[in-house]
Amino acid sequence: MDTAHLGPGARLALDTILQEPTTGIPSWMLHIMEHDAIERLAGASAGAYRADPDGVYLTMQRCLGTCLLDQYLAHNPLSMGSEGYEGGPRGATTGIERIVLDGMPIDSPEAVVEHMEKHVFPSLRQAAAAFDEDSRTAEILASEERLQTMLGPSMLKSGHGFVRLPGLAYGSYGYQHYFAAYALYPDVMEKHFSLQADVALRNNRAAARAYATGGLAPLYRLDHDMADSRGTLVRPESLDRIWFPHLARCLEPLVRADVRLIWHCDGNLMAMVPRLLECGLRGFQGFQYEDGMDYERICRMRDSDGRSLIIIAGASVTRTLPFGRPVDVRRELEWLVRCGPATGLFLGGSSSIIPGTPYRNLETLAEGLAYFRTHGRSGAN
Picture 1 (tube, rainbow, N blue to C red):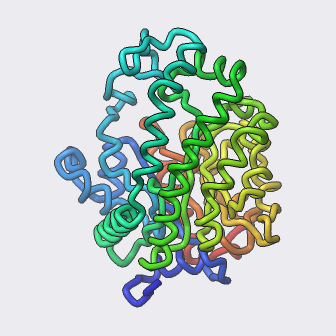
Picture 2 (spheres, one colour):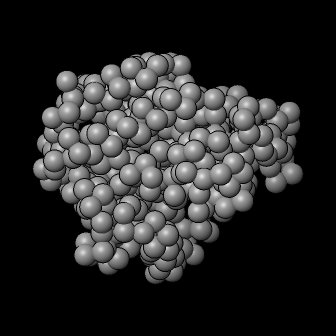
Picture 3 (cartoon, one colour):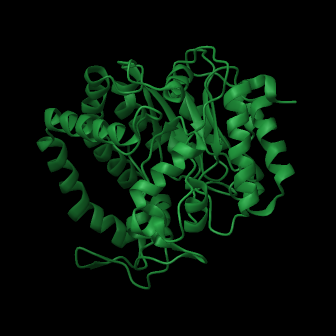
């Protein structure tokens, strides 16, 4: 890609993606949800974020020294108030009392299967047949170029939101009936994954072309929640049979194009980590250490070609930042650096930072990120 326009922070991010030796450790975006904290970190007045969410959010990122931003979330905190989430109706996974899709009540695992076969499968077949790869490539490039222009030269935009993969459909059908159907009707579930992957393959060929022709930063973060604090939502052995082959198939164009694919981790995803690496992934982001994600072990792993991993590590947004003290934040950052890979390491928060997080902890995190951007690994005790 053309690097002439990049500022020092964005160049540091690109060198880290390419796993070149660097002096400093680049900062990944901090997605802070509390309006008052956004405004204070941006040096803005009270109420300024609601009046100008894009301007204040981007100013905050620049003040924090953000080097890499993948997911543009400037408007996302508008759903939050001082006590937490305030927006939107309830859905299939957020307490809706009755799920109805295409006029069909989803009240049993058999209803899930019937809806898939009657509505979802024909729609996916049609989408794969009609997919316009040229148009999709142009769409991806236009969106990524627009966002990079918004960010300016100080931050590097990397990929999120335009690669597709087969997913668990609990978001449509709810947990109870979907996972019962998953257990009872594995052949139907594999058909769903296969048809999703057919569409995803067409999309991902277009995405690989966008990377090749548009000079996009060769990093993409995949994001699909497949675990809770106990482990994977379904047995990984079942995924070996009916999901992983279709995941690998649809990601192959991006792997072949040498796009560094990393996976966002929620919950305890340890059983899936080696399997994802076998599919061609190059690293991970977002670790719930308290749920059993073994950061030190993951950082010692290698990808399928024997290369060290790209890791976006972060201070814990579920434990350290909301409930710890500044000394705990500093100690965790030092641990992340000390045990992280020698190249390919970014620092930030492990995920979105919730309202109510002590502001002093946010200041300490920002100070730590600035320190390691300058001092690199030599700054860790």
